[in-house]
Image: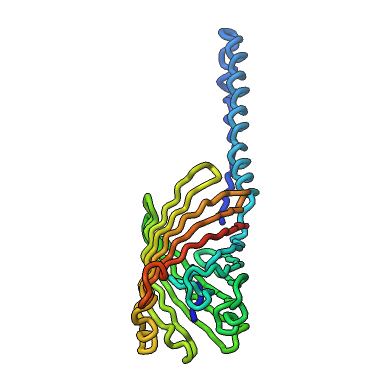
Length: 306
């Protein structure tokens, strides 16, 4: 069996107005010679107060920035996919048929605080005659909890780490997986990612599900309009089993996988994105030809950033 998972400070400015006084003694020394000259002198100070009139504009702009609403850091997601692809395997397939369209419905939520994030994801099979069997066998009704941390290592270079817990509360047997991971991303004309994951089946009954997963990938987003973008992904996966049980389970099957995905992300409203997508995935299956080892499927994802 297998499972799935993948503020601001405001400154205040203070303006001070200083007025210069004119000496009265000098003004009275020669009244007979130039009585009209002092009459023009007061005109200069009359213009002086005009300069401070512009000073309040800076604090007004900063006050407006302070009043601007900030995001809550909460993101809600939901989606449907005609296949549940987990690292090259169609998890909801009936009798191992890679192209069985036994659809997945998912819901999720993520809360970001500082460099950290806390996420939930739930996946449910909604088509197929094997829904009940998959729930009993710890494949359906999957629940995930993830704690993530991300930091910038250098310009255009980030490091993200995640600790994931996958569990199946409706399964007949207690089934739990832990997965620590680290992903480094270099953002240039395309985003280059390299992820390292250690998937660990906690119970002895699933000790064959213990492996290191190496996952290089490339992402490219092409802006088609202000509200529409084309998001492309290409990824490869390699499993390195740890332990005799895992080496036997992943001897010649599902040790490698590949994914190509294309999505049209449309901003339907502020913070809301709708993304239909198409996908092609493949994995090696011992004794199967290419036609039996790949899957094509579609999906629709919705995201709301609050």
